[in-house]
Image (cartoon, rainbow over all chains, first blue to last red; front, side, top):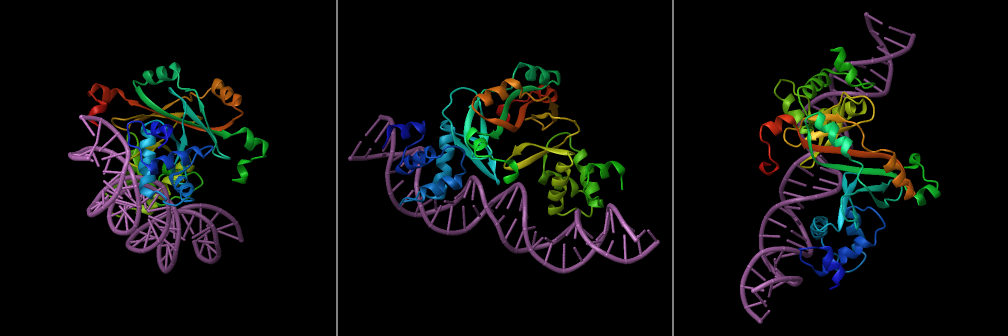
Length: 144
Length: 144
DNA sequence: CCTTAAGTGAGAACGGTTCTCACTTAACGA
DNA sequence: TCGTTAAGTGAGAACCGTTCTCACTTAAGG
C-alpha cells in the first residue's frame, strides 16, 4: 500500500479501494464530481462501490487532500488541493482546471461588516474564469 | 393585485399565488429555504402548490427580488435582496439575518489570477458571521 | 497475533427539486 | 371589451445526488 496514498487520508484508515480512489483523484487535472470519479474507477476490475467513493471523498476532504470547489448540475465539484494555508479556488469554466488564489477578504470587508454589527466567522469564495488553454482554444461562454 | 408585488417579478407574469409568495418572502427577516417559504404560505387557505413556490422563487431570482445566499442541510437558502449593483451577502449563522456587503474581489486578485493566465468571468462570495442580536443573546457556535 | 473500530458493498431509502399533463388565466392586441 | 395564447397552476410522479442499512471484511494498534 503506497505511503503517499496513506498520507492523503490523514487519521482515516487506508484500504486498497481508497488507494485506487486517491490515484483516480490524481488522474484529474481539475474539478470532478463523485460520479465522474466513480466512472474513472470503473475502468478497472473490483470497482469500489458508490458508497465507498462518497465515503472516501468525505475522508479526503477532512484530511485536506481534496476541497469542494463549487457544483455542477446539482452535484458537488471536488478538486485535488495541495496548497497550504487559507486560500480559495479559481475554477476554469471551460475545462474545470483549478488553481489556488489568495483570499480577497481583507480588513476593509471585516470592518464594513463590523459597521453592521456583524462578527465574521468564516466565508466562502470561489472564482470562475477561463484558463490559458481554453482561451487559446477559443473557448466562448456561448458555446456552453 | 398589488403594484409592488407585480414589480417583484419583472417580466414574469403575476398571479394571486405569486402575490402571496412575495408577501411571504417579505415576512422573513433573513434567509429561508423553499420549504420554509411554503410552510409560511400554508398558514392560509388556498396554499400554492410546491411546484408553484419553486417556480416563483426562480422567477423572483431572475428579476433580482431574491438572491441565493448559501445553503442549509442540502437546501438552497434564499433571501430578499433590495441592494442594487454588485455586492455580496453576509449571513448570520445564528438567526439567518442577511445584509449586503461590498465585493472584496479587487484588482489585486484579478491580477493574481492573470498571473496564472486565468481571465476571471465571475465569482461567488458569501460571508458568514454572527449578527448584533445573536451576539447580544449570547449566541455560541457550540450550541448549534 | 487479537481485538475492535472502521471500511465495504449492494440495495434501499431519502429529500430537495424538477417534470408531466390537463386545466386555468394574466397579459396584450385588435 | 373581447379573443388569443403563452405562461402559470397543482397533484403527483419522477429524478438523481447522496446517505443509510446491515451483514461481512479488514486495517491498525497493543
